[in-house]
Image (cartoon, rainbow, N blue to C red):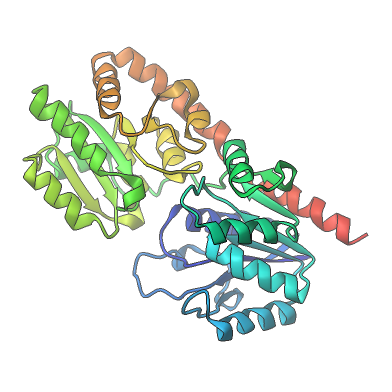
Length: 370
C-alpha cells in the first residue's frame, strides 16, 4: 500500500480544490492510502468536505496563519515524519512552497508539485523559490503541455521535470434541475438562446465581459432573445450585480449564487462562455462541454487545445468576436448541433483519467522501492 498525502491551501469550492477532491475520491484504494492536508482552515460554507469519500481521520489541518508561520511549519514537518508518507503531492503556490520544503527536510521519498495554470503573475521570489525547489522535486505535474512549457520558460526549469496528467474530473450530474425548470425560474422563454458561464466571481474570471457581450447584443444590436446565466460565488458578486443594473440588463443577465450546484445549471444552456484572463484546463469548461454546450472562450492556458473545432477561441478582451460567435450559433442551428456533439466527444477526450495519475505514482514508487 502506497501512502500518499495530497496538500492544498484551503478546501473551499474552486477548480484546483475540485481536482484534488476527485483525485482522492477516485484513486484506487487497494493500492493507495490517500490523506488530505490543508494549510488553512475555512469558515466558509462553500467547501468540499462533505464530498470527500475518505474518513475524517485522514484529513489534517495544519492551521497556518501565513507563510511565515514557523509553528505551523514545524507542525507540518512533524506530521510528515510521523506519517511516514511515501509520496507528497502539493497544489498551488503556498502548498507547493511550504510542503515541498518540509518534505525535503524530513526526506519524503517522492515529492510532487502541481501547477494547475499558467501563473504569469508570480513574484520574482516565488519564481526563484520554485526553481530551487524543483531540483528536489521528483516531478512537476501540469494538466497540459502548454502550461508545462509556460512554467518551464518562466521559471527556468527543465521541461524534462514536467509530467502532463489531465485534470481529474467528475462529469456526472446530480440531476437537480430540469432545463425547462431553470428557464421558467429565470423567466427565459423556451426558444431563448442561453449562454452559461460558471466560475468564482473574481478578477481573473472576468465575468464583466459577459455583461459587455450582453450589452452589445441587447442594446446595440437590438437582439432580445439572448440570455446569460453567470453562476458561482465570490467577492465580485455585488460589483457584477451593480454593472448589470447600470446597464439595464436585469431581464437578460442573471447572477446565480449557488456554487454547490453550479454545473447543474449547464442543462439550461446552449453555449458556454469562458472570458477568463487566466486558466489551466478549466474543470468548468470540461463539465459544460460534456453537457453538449458549445464553448466560446478566450485563448488562455490549455483552453485552445481542449476546444479545437468544437467551439470558438477568441483573444482576450475581444468582446465583438464572442458576440459574433454567439449570433452565428443562434442563427445556424445545424452548426450548433454539430458543434454540440463535437463538444461532448472533446470533453471525454480531454479530461484526465485517474489511471494516468496512478501510473505515474506507481512508476515513481517502483524506482525507490527497488
